[in-house]
Picture 1 (cartoon, rainbow, N blue to C red):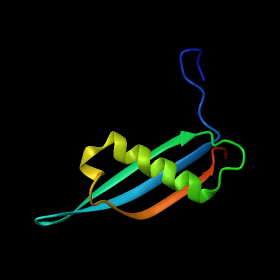
Picture 2 (cartoon, helix red, strand yellow):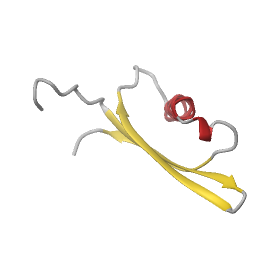
Picture 3 (cartoon, helix red, strand yellow):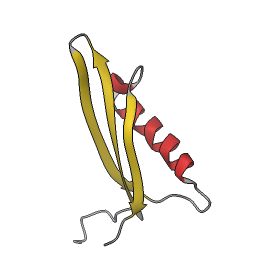
Picture 4 (cartoon, rainbow, N blue to C red):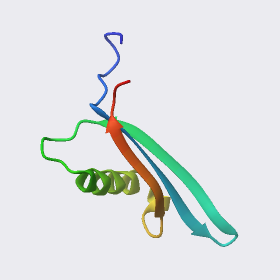
Length: 76
């Protein structure tokens, strides 16, 4: 990591979503890293991250369906 790069969060997450359209479905994938506060559960992380995704992507606000989600420690 260089001095200009921001440190990464302690956890990596990804989410796949489907949005119904007039011609079928549109697929979306979002991912990132974050550092949950102590005591955060997977449900807490899911709700927080879904709310953040919807806030940042207006096309997902009304009728997006999450088809997959995962959060793991951000280390190999």
